[in-house]
Image 1 (tube, helix red, strand yellow):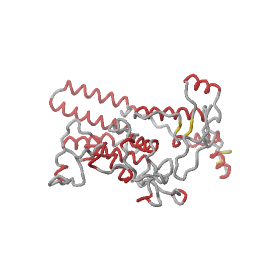
Image 2: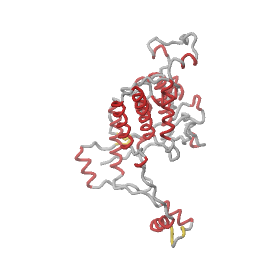
Image 3: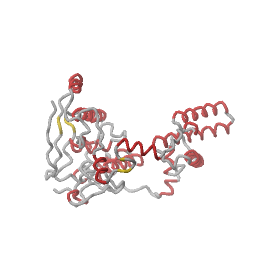
Image 4: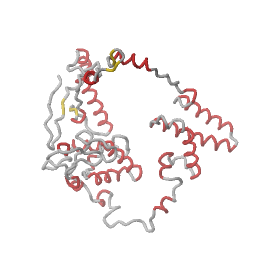
Length: 363
């Protein structure tokens, strides 16, 4: 079985990331043929799974993603607490398919959707079968008309507060006003969350003032002020921008060796200098592996999956530029001994035309 990367590059159709053994997921040649990888990278698969879970149900999200990516739906591979969706739920399902032996067929080709459970009547206890029909008179207009706000508004602002159409529109207006000065520099996810929470409080403040309940309004106003202060969202909290001086920048580059007597290095020297400018961390590669294995086993415990002494292949990090010490220090060995950590083992590279792993072990 030849991998697509041996012939041409395969990219995620959503984010454009190049698909390989780490970023992508090798799927059945049925429907994928020469590209072989699922058309979404692992991160985008997780995001689509979350989207399906939110808009249908977590149970149906597994089935939809398996069908969409042509991989088998295996109930045993679902993580424990599988209906509590978080940012790694789908990733854990993919890992469990592999660890439970359902990822590949006997011919070493990746399993397809048809190799799992596909009978809806079996999956949903007889409530859905091949003869199930849609509700009479079903239409987008009638369905959407039952809920206030647009789909996007409900996703952005939630439904717990029971907002009306007018309130959803006011929240959108408030967000536009509050975020206007920050759009140019970009708004990260944490900032957007905080801004939207402040918009909700601003709406509550306006409604409370309209009722004449100024005591309650003051409480809400104090919460808004405190939240803005804690998140540095007030105008006076913004750090002043230090002017960038050309001579200051040139001096810094001179100290780093990128300039010589005020002139940038020749191309060949500059390239070599840049290539050699790699970070160096005060720890060994072996200790990093112990740390990563602890993270993986913590995730497994959270999902009810047995822990393992093996470090999964996809989490084995290669130190390419000498950024980590090749051998453990005496202090690190004492830490491992004091914590009673089991000797490290390394999972071999998976089947499917991939080379075998080095199989090294730590003392």
